[in-house]
Length: 140
Image (tube, rainbow, N blue to C red):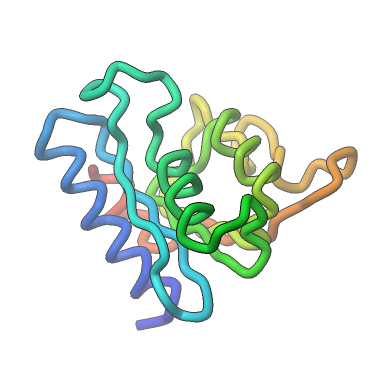
């Protein structure tokens, strides 16, 4: 098992928490120096907040954990390709590496519909690794 698969399995565990409470089953975690500094799952339906996506919540928790909005030494693991809002938050928080499981052909903005994480006009770009445990992530 690769390190990316190890962390994606934990992101899948977060997605299962979302599924258990009737949320869209998406999970995310942020890792810095081989330590998980934030975990989250979708809460949009639960708290009726449109920004309560797993990635967005994880980014907020990670920024609080490190005491900075700059998450320059972190990797974000997420079970589904980030949407436009979450891709924007990734760019704004300077996360250098994103690993996702399943592509999102209807809303993915990290390679499917567009690639905001590689957009040369932004002042930050992130390396994207896609398809990690894709089948398991896509089955949720």
